[in-house]
Length: 408
Image (cartoon, rainbow, N blue to C red; front, side, top):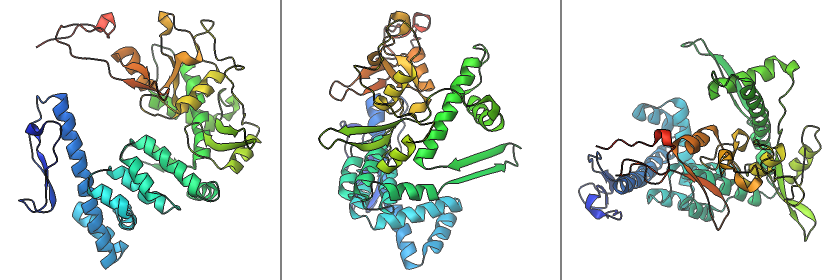
């Protein structure tokens, strides 16, 4: 069988079932230099499907090795034959054993219909509790990784039988932290894993401290984002007398079911589901501030009275956008960006603001990326500038000082 994109004349990826390759995936090597965007997109898509097929073949072989012998033997073979680390081999064997029990997921992966990372998410979720496998496979065929992860978490919550409390408890049991000195560099390395609630709270406090440090910096001699993040953590731990930075501690969201007069669908602002019992517990803590935002009562329309967004506006943006509209970075890392630029008379009003990370903010202001809103869903996103390499030698989207385009 040959997989044919829109233009078959440059197809170089074939999957034969009885031809020269046998029942395998064959990818022909081609010189991609000078290919059009359409050709490159088609080739990348075909290679992606081939990677999914190869991942399914590998998973089947690893699972069979574990079945015939045991997981330890399979890990050893993976380490020896793929020259991978013990940790990676252990991860491969666990994923293979889980996939072997998931018929629909394995079939979709083998057909190249879903990416390997989506299949691994389904396999991992199957070990945490009940799932609707076919519904997840259907979603994996259509959604990108970030969207699919949210779909999966919500399904886990709905099918858990205890509002997701057991899932959260397991995540808390798996918390871990490790600090060690890198012998090559002499630098200390700190890695940690937390449950979503604890991690979100820590991340929000660190982000608030980073913004405080950014405001204190000399604009002509700024730290890198990585340096600022390290300094923020160090200051929070080593200099607690300075206090925590002013900002948003933790944003919790729930919908109100008017018919039953109760809160439902509790979640963190990035969409991570939360047991209702956990929402109540957190709402009683002194440093958590629950609030109900109503467009008619909250002061979310500030016009030209101030340039920077208020905490109320930031919270509303975090809930609405659930992260950077360009890349999906966590909402507590976002900046409130004016869709109609402030310098062009744009107001600091909620409808004119979107949440973007530092990199995507630079893409908008320095590289001509556009912010667009889906008319059906109301969701915002960024997209690259139109026609970045025109034939005329000038562009209509770049600032004047970078408008010249070199032509061959």
